[in-house]
Image 1 (cartoon, rainbow, N blue to C red):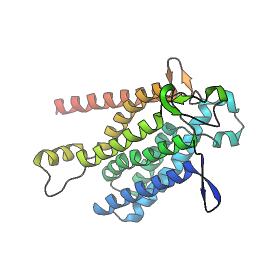
Image 2: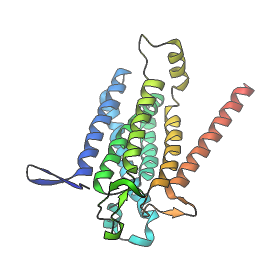
Image 3: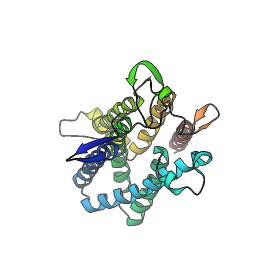
Image 4: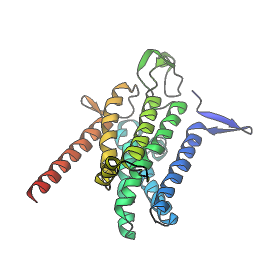
Length: 261
């Protein structure tokens, strides 16, 4: 793998550089969509920064919780050395929601934009994982010969590139949410307009449900054990099941409410 890339004689972390590209592109997309819908660009940048701060804390916190037996409760540097996406997703959404509500911004607009921005950024993050040597896949004879500082010589074998698979699916999810569920033009069909109107304010729930299914399935292709397990499933799989369960209950309640009314 290529955990570092040389730029003008300096070794820079590949993960950080690729993530920076993801931050710039997804942030620009979010700002553009906000301005297009009448929001001041500063408002979106502000909300993104607050959400990102919460995400940073949550991702490291969940990593620490799932690895207490390995890193120790007081080993702060080891805690900062790892992160779990779901931890960042949950706390990032909570802090972002709190900020948008506090500032009385249009919640529907911000949640819809967040639903598209998250998979766009995450797709670049998974490419960074591939080059950094983390989140690697299971051994596979037709896979990529995987070198990672986290693997012993005996474990350095051909592995399934699960990070690249997830990245491709995340980009597909982004394009699907944007072009199929959100974007409308003067040439949009009546069916497209009705679909986008129906899904307005619900894109975040659509994203969370689809990503939870995606993540639950691709966890079976992961070969790293550090992400934590409980019984037959990994920590992320249990969280995925919880998310799907909450969404199903929410949909059933909404349908029941509509039937009564």
